[in-house]
Amino acid sequence: MLKRKVKVIHKKIKDKKMTSAGDERKRRIVKHLIYESNKTQLIAYFYSASLQLLKQYVCLFQSKDPLIHKLNEKQLEMFVKFLACFIKTEYLQGKDATGLKNLDIVDNILLPKDQIFYGKHTETVMAKYSKGDSELEEFKINVETCYVNAGKYLQKKLPLNNPVLCAMSAIDPIARDNANSKASYYLKQLPKLAVNVLKPEEEDPYVMEVNGYMLDENLPATLSIRGTGDKPDQHVRVDKWWSEVRKTGKYPCLTKMVFAMLSCFHGPLVEASFNAMGDILGNKSFNMNLDTYNSYQTVQYYLKGHGTSAIKLFTRTDVLNGPIDMKMCKNIKSSASEYKKLQEEKREDREAKEVYHKKRDLESKKAYKKKTEKEENEAREAHINMQKQKYKKKQEKKI
Image (cartoon, rainbow, N blue to C red; front, side):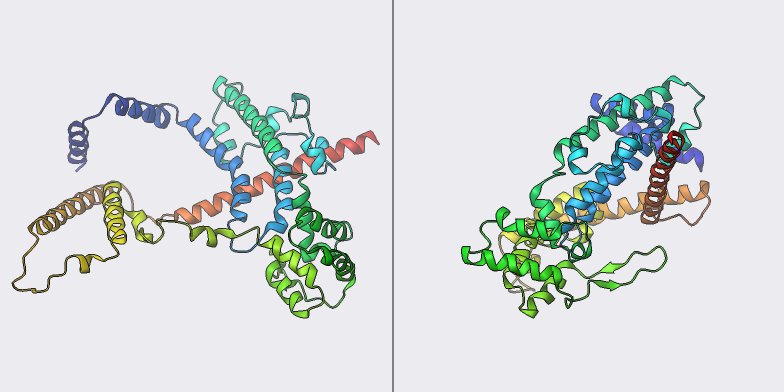
């Protein structure tokens, strides 16, 4: 069976005509996966661990809930956590958005290379190398450079001290209960930033409404479900909460401004409506191979453009005596035979694999991804806490 499988592989490779670019790509793949497997794992695991924080931040704002009031807080939180992966704690402690924006990321504030956050799985691969290995040392230097460049880029691109985002954070009902949030000040700044929302005669009543809102003790509850154990509290969606406030009729100018701010964040549901191919390609189309996918979208696009369906396009008035489209019949037969041939090849491959691989319950891709994300998050939090403890002990020694 093994010899037969090897022969099949050799035959497939022999029949496949490779271009010079294809040969080069194959050599590259073999080099990275076989001869430099440890190095490849180091890079892949590091990217998985370090970019996960950025991915979580992006995915947060792909939810259905309007979260523009959380944007300023979450981007600051993400940026601090990212910097904590490679910068000493004392240079981040007590820094506000302006301080982080002006932080000079230079060598003397960086953590030693052995204390930089690499990720749990990356460190497992690093342990396979001997101490002082040139490949490992080169990897550490590259990681430090990568962190520094990414930190400077985020520092430049993120609107950390943006006055509009700071003011928008005040529409969060939870900010009203926080004495240090400056919610009243920021709410009063909104008409100066969004000048086309209120009429001139509404500006003075707006200020009075903000004062009343900050002292009002009869507003709807913000807490939806109280957290238990590791689960945090769940709060009412900000748009639904403000809808309840609007129903009271007490703050017409304030609610008008708030809903204008919330409308800036339209979410993925609205974005999906602009997808021109959304009604052409279905959910199952993503499981097709490239040739089938290409043919499928071409046919669907043609039918959509002519405002018809496949049944209507090939309908015959006289089923018994009407002319038959011979080309279509030929295509149907050839596609059926190609499909059967493909299925047979897949079946043979599957049977060959089953002989040499023990059957076992495999972890789903989704479950593995979730487990890996959890492990890397825990490792990152442990790294940040460890650096904080070191900084605390250093301060205690000085005293």
